[in-house]
Amino acid sequence: MPFLELDVLNNPNNAILGIDLGTTNSVAAIWQDGRPTVLRPPGQNDGRIPSVLHFPEDGGIVVGRNARALATESPESSLFSVKRLMGRGLEDVRTDLDGIPFEGSETDSGLLQLEIRGKKYSPQELSARILHHVWQVAGAALGELAPLRAVITVPAYFDDAQRQATRDAARLAGLEVARIVNEPTAASLAYGLDQKNDGTVAVYDLGGGTFDVSILSIEEGVFRVLSTSGDTHLGGDDIDQTLVELALSELAGKADEATLADPAFRQGIRLSAEKCKIELSSRPESELHVVAPEHGIAWRRTIRRAELEERIAPLIQRTLDACRRAMADAKLQPSDIDEVVLVGGSTRVPAVRSQVQEFFGREPHTALDPDEVVALGAAVQGHVLSGGTRDMLLLDVTPLSLGIETMGGAVSKVIDRNSPIPTQVTEGYTTYADNQTGIDFNIVQGERELARDCRSLGTMKLSGIPPLPAGMARVAVRFSLDADGVLNVTAKEESTGTEASIDLAPMHGLTDPEVEQMLLDSYDHAQEDFDASRLANLRIEIGTMSRAVSSHLASAIGLDRDTVLDIEEAVAAAEKSATTSDVAAVQAARDELERATLPLAAALMDSVAKRALEGKTLDQV
Ligand code: AMP
Image (cartoon, rainbow, N blue to C red; front, side):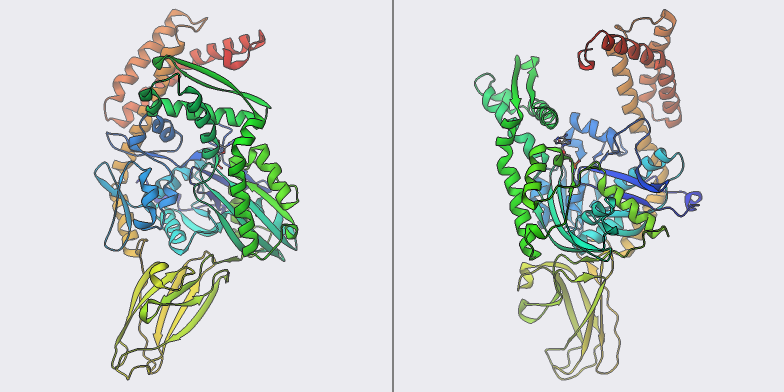
């Protein structure tokens, strides 16, 4: 990986980056001039960085915007939603893997891996690529190297293994994690709710593919997650799907089976459905159209907002059911909620807003961009941790109980669900056989009574217990959960004062030596990897620019012959260069192409402006 060189290890102002590492998109923000600011890629006003990876045939990894563009053309070499795989085992993610074009496997220690173009990657390594890209975008936005310390947000329901996997990803990306913060807590911070002395907050987060609701309490500016609920497969994509189904049912008589099953055709409908949905958030009516000349189809249909609302009513109802469950878990009534915060792009749907408002009986906070609010809150937390004002301690709770498997497969709970963290609990255990000198511990997480129904976080062995009759040895097991929700377990044999050290071997995580090894490997291959990825990106940029030239050059008015020749030459040179692997030469050819096409871009802008002035809308030009 193109990881960091030593000269960037100094961060002069000790700033801390805030990163919302999302399933679909990630966002970086930082505290600047007295407030949190989203770091947008230069020249763009959208701060979202797609959490998408693309693996070109000839090597390298493309991340972010470019990857998303390529994913539309070649989904079979692209990866979405790595976040769903973080800190999970193969069995946990079977259904998620169905939607992924790569083969999943598990190492002996239970680490999930995906085989991509002959190489195996853990979700942590893949997520590290995304984090590294986010860091680079942040640096480009800042005009200087971005801070290497970061606050990273995770869903409130993330368990220990998932949080640990996020930390490992950050380490692999060369970042130091200043704090892992829950997404709903971050969203509340962005709205300054920590300034309140006390109260109860409901954070309703409806994104593209996931829905989460969290109930938080604030006590003297300190947050506690009281409960969480949600649906990991419910979001804006399902809203789009209602329109896709409408289109497909109306097209049924007009298109043949093969056309209706064609993935590219379906993707076209999906994009049109999303566009129509987004327009309906600000207009009472929009048009859903499916135009596929290659299939002889040109279908249009006006959709009224009320019609969409009727179709998505059951989806909104499902989110409200989850809100009801979260309220019951927190033992609260909707009238107990003082503040409602909306997060996620789909909370822009007016019916979502109004029904959430009705459910909680409060007008929700909507002033901040729902796609950016979590990153903004992470930046606030980063500011506080780097010594800024707004002194506060963030308290969260553990979402699931933590315990130990005892004889017969039962679970002995050590830390109860919803215990505020950080916390430390020590429990005493003993041996069950005479002269037993070792104990195997299985650390589990979950609410079920039997260990096999809970999730195993890892196993560890305590050896060196002196031979004693059964029941005489006294083993103190200490569970300590830190402020990030990361668990550390230690055990000590006390009856004789003998201490034994034990290591927790994470089931779905990386061990320290594994992380070290991956870092070493990444340093070894850093230049190679960097070149391959750089080359892949340059080829994409050249491809995009030359496609733009071929579709606009003929119609551009006011370009003299020399300029046209200059552009044509630059296109030919860049395309030729793109077939080589000389990074410096390809970069030079790409820069030359950009320079040569500047007059074309200017001419196009002119004609767009002129036509707009003639009363035409931009999309008609
Ligand atoms: P997120 O994962 O939070 O970025 O949310 C993305 C989802 O929000 C996608 O399903 C988008 O289609 C949806 N979305 C974005 N803007 C709007 C809008 N104005 N109205 C309705 N849905 C939107």
